[in-house]
Image (cartoon, rainbow, N blue to C red; front, side, top):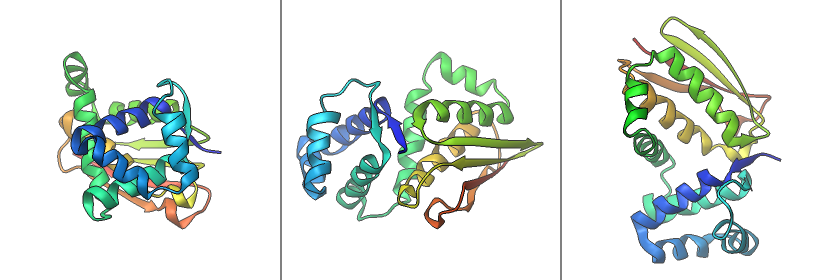
Length: 187
């Protein structure tokens, strides 16, 4: 089973709470099936930030949030991921990113992703001005993670000074298969 680090889920809840308030959280929870709603109320909202959360349940929460916040527009997750990485990269960390080369940023994000997911492997191949990143282990119903991953890579590359950043999945999570493949290019 694929899991996501509880701190990422708690950060997402905090972001939703800041955007929509407690009433928005309740509206989202109301769209979840009873088992997932109970899980969020009993486990996630009271959990330690280091606990692991089944990715299936987190994806259901994201779907409900998209319905409440963005009319179901999945692409909205790209902007949210970009905003998250901007928040996370404040102060000295922002200086570190700006002084980094794009290829080292790709390496770093891939390494960090392995600490945020259990049951997902990452392979990467870097060349001058481009990279291929494969994610192994996601299931078709985890397809929303593509938008989150795109947002993180795009914004991090932009923050380090990469120009003409292009990011696209050439093998999608929703299509199944042994891996999803992200192609990145920059100058």
